[in-house]
Amino acid sequence: MLPLIRMPSPDSEVTVNRIEPASAGMPDIARRAAEAKARLERVSATATSADGAVTVTVNTSGALQEITFGPRADELPRARLAQAVLAAAKRAQVDAAQQLTAVMAPVIGADSDAMHFLREQIPAPELPEEEPAPPRWEFTETPRETPPPPPVRPARPRPDDDEDFGGPILRRGL
Image (cartoon, rainbow, N blue to C red; front, side, top):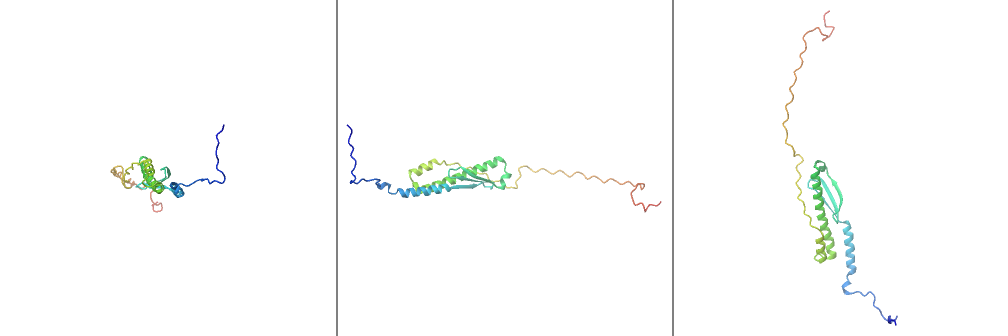
């Protein structure tokens, strides 16, 4: 024999989707989350090396979005230029992470467990000490003494004999 299931009669009231007091602020949270999402899509951070050789832009996750080289980049050795790119990228990533936490704080609470978790997920990179750029006029080699100019060759003496064809013909006596 099957169990009997009682359905409410059409005349009885059934409570559907009753809002609990704890979820009364859900529309406000959803609005703040949507605003945060829109702001996060626009977050980027840019950093430039101290000597202006390189400028790097990263997105919220720290991914490289743009890199530009200034005139000074042509003068740097490749190893030094690579160091400048990495140092600028790391500074930009730190800035992007700070923007991320600033955007998320109003949504999840500045001192909430969720914010602590978010901060734990963002590694604190060690910012490299960027070497100060050497002045543009600094030489890497010691200047060598300039050698003395070669000795001047004396002029060739002219022959003194008049029997050559040097001089005007009309003045010669025939």
